[in-house]
Length: 238
Image (cartoon, one colour):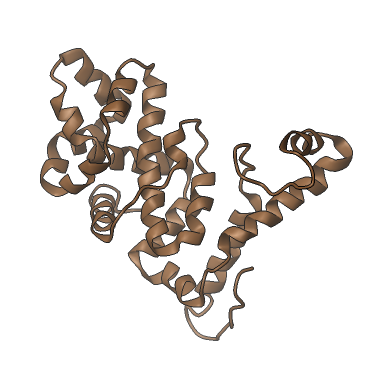
């Protein structure tokens, strides 16, 4: 359960409380992930999903699933809640939990552009480069080809040849989803370094099917700093 918060008087004193209210809403209103691990014993997974779609049992079982979602916030301390308001990592956490999906996709593609920069630069065929520019979007492609080698080179460790090769033979929308999923997983991994109880909740918001969007990466503080720098330069409004 979320830790109790003492409400104090004074300007700005209620900000942590407002954050907790938004967090509680995110926990209880997040979509049910069909692939999530839900403790539905003594029922089998198939029995549970069948009952979830029936009239008499669907609503109470959905409430049960959403109650389990509260476990994702277990271990969140008062200090971490305060840090959600004042630290860059906390700001990033709120962005992933409460930001619009269009805005999140834009951020994810920028991060992916930085992660894939060495692979993108290695592509020499004009038609493939144009495809990558369309899939990543103009800004993310500029990050990959112009900024990342100098400013975010360390994020290149998270790019993969497999993702590039798969994207180049996919439809444009599929390639874009795969790129965005990688970027979002890196954003969620940055959150996990400081607010791990909330990282899986952030991943649960990701709507696309790519498996990359549901995996946390082994990330270090120096990588988080590069991601924050990228967002501050390219998306100062986040």
